[in-house]
Amino acid sequence: MINSSEFLDFLREKGFSFATGVPCSYFSRMIDEFENLKAISYIPATREDEAVGIASGIAFGGARAFVIMQNSGYATIGDALTSLAQLYKLPMLLIVSWRGLEPDRDFPEHSLMGEVTEDTLVGYHVPYWEMKEEDWQETIELALTEMDETSRPVALLVKQGVL
Amino acid sequence: MTMYGFEIIQELASVLSGDEIIVSSNGNISRQVYHFLPKPQIYLRGSMGLPVPVGLGMAMARPGKQILTLVGDGNLLMGLGSLTTTSFIRPSNLKILILDNNAYATTGSQMTSSGILEYPSLLDGFGIPNIVPILQDDPIELIKEKLQLWIDASELCVLPALVDSNPPTLTNIPWHPEQITEFQKNISS
Ligand SMILES: Cc1ncc(C[n+]2csc(CCOP(=O)(O)OP(=O)(O)O)c2C)c(N)n1
Image (cartoon, rainbow over all chains, first blue to last red; front, side, top):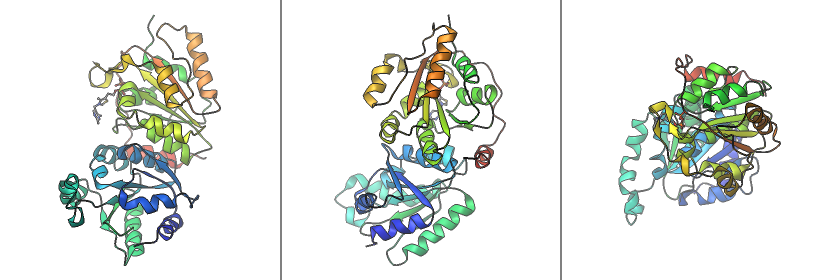
């Protein structure tokens, strides 16, 4: 499991001073860690599209935000991506949990979304990487290079037990 | 007497100091802000429901600027939850003007359900400081007074305006959204 405080410190060093989103149980340790790390302001949003809106405003203002969401939440942000963040070229890092896989067999509410998560990322032209414990820093570097080069949202997919 | 939303936007010109950044909601409101107020501003084209969150993010990233968010009732209702987030964060440099024409004017003036809202108690319930709404038959001096109070507020503040719907026909905003973002990069903090 990636150490939450190391993870947030790393993103802070990469220039992220804001975070927003809606929780997933996969991210509970990370969200608790915001309490200790005052250098990143966390804005609890009521919906994931609202969070993309907030991150867009932050990007318009020249700062950087990452957005935390469950893949069920990713399913609700299509218009916020296509008619705002992607259209206006507003960079942001989406950290998306990948529920609905084998460990979630008792959670049928996630099954279909788990199956189509990659298809919807591809469908909406969002470059994405699966983040694994072994090489998470390199993966984030790759994602942020793409984010900076294209000035658009990119995503990290996170399976259970990684964060 | 009638007071149209675009007339409120025109009135805004006289209270702006020039140091504000406006975030305007999609459709007619963005077009009117483009045509009647100083440029450049952040003209949203899509992202219906998100002008309040965009204004909130902008206010946090640019604490030295006054951020004015102009939102139609259709947009407000689609993103109503963002009022909670805004109240929770409470940026003192964020001001929200609700232009409630009780309609989705941009798509052909179909009615919205906003007519049942009672703004002062709604906003009080959200814990958001607010000014007595602008009403259709307010004399122009009173409207200017309310706009001035709103823009001068030292904390987060919402001004609802109940207006008539009869938008003028205006040409589309000629700038590509990417240009709108570029212009913001050149505005000093
Ligand atoms: C998600 C989404 N649904 C529907 C539309 C179509 N649409 C564009 S503008 C608009 C009305 C906006 O209403 P309001 O905020 O009250 O502003 P007004 O048009 O009255 O000035 C609608 C429904 C859209 N752009 N996006």
